[in-house]
Length: 419
Image (tube, rainbow, N blue to C red; front, side):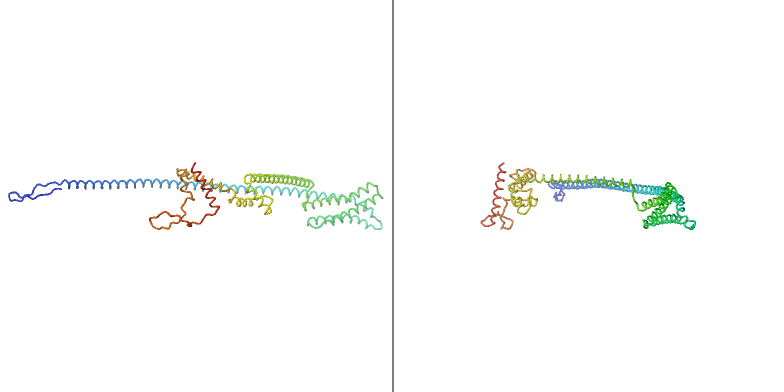
C-alpha cells in the first residue's frame, strides 16, 4: 500500500513521492497467502472429493460387477439346476414309458402264453372227454350182450330192450352230471343215480353170467358195467375240482410245508422278541437299581425323604416325579441344581467376566456383588445429588433364611477376595 503526500514548494503545491506501509503490505501478503491457502485447500478438497467420488464410483462399479457376476452365476446355477431337473424328469418319463411298454409286452406275452396253455388244456380236456365217451361206449357194448341174454324171452321179445334202456339211462344221467357241473348246479344226485344204474347192470351181468356162462364172463361184464360210468365219473370229478379251485395233493403238501415254515419262523421271531424284551426289562431294572444306589450314596437326605414320599404316595419305587419333589423339598432346587452348584456357577461366571474385562475376580466382584448395591431410595432430586443416608426402619428386615444366605455369600466372597 502506498500513500501520496501533498507538499508546498516555493508556493506551489507538489505531489510528494509515494511511500509504502509495511504493515499494510504484510496484511496484504497475509490476506493473499490466506486466500491462496484457502484456494489450495478448496482445490485439494475438490480434488479429494473428486478422487473420493472416482474411488467410490470405481468401488461401486466393482461391487456392481461382483453383484452382477454373482447374479449371473446364480442364474447359471439355477438354469443348470432347472436343466438337470428337466433332464431327470425326462429320464424318469422315458423310463416310465419304457417300463410301461415292457409291462405291456410282458402282459401280451403272458396272455399269449396263457392262451396257448389254455388251448393245450382245452385240447387235452376234449381228448380226455372223447376217450371217456369212447371207453363208456366200449364197456356198454361188452356188458349189453349178457344183460340182453338175461332179459331175453321168446314170448316177450320186447324185454330185450330193458338192458339197452338201463345203459342209455346211465349215459343220460352221466350227461346230466356234465351239464350240472358246467352250470355250477348241484351234481351229487346225478352221480348217485349213475352209480345206482351201473350197480344194477353189474349185478345183472354177475348173476346171469355166473348161471348161464362161466365166472370170467360174469366178472368181466360186471366190471364193464362199472368201468364205463366210473371213468366218466372220474372225468366229471376232475372238472368239478377245477371248477371249485381244489388243490392237488402236491399243492396241499407244498402249502402245508409253507404254513409250517411260516409258523416256525413266527414262533422263532416271537421267541427272539420275548428274549429281547426280557433283556431290555433286565437292563432297565439293573439301570434303575444302579441309579437308586447312586442316589442313595450321593444324596442320602434326599433319598431318605424320597423313600418316605414314595411310601406315602403308594409307590413301590422312587419315580422321577417323586425324586423331583424330594429334591425341591430338601435342597430347594430342581434335579441338577443346588446352592453349591449355583455358587460355583456364579464364581465361574465372574471369572469369565474378569477374563473378558482383563480384571481380577475381586475387583469385578466389588462392582457386581448384589449384596453391596445401594438399597436406599434417593430422596433428593436435581443435578446435585448426595448419597443416601441409611436410617433405622428405612428397609424391611431380611428373613432368617435370607440373612443366613447373605452371611454365607459374604464369607465366600471374602475368601475369594483373599486368594
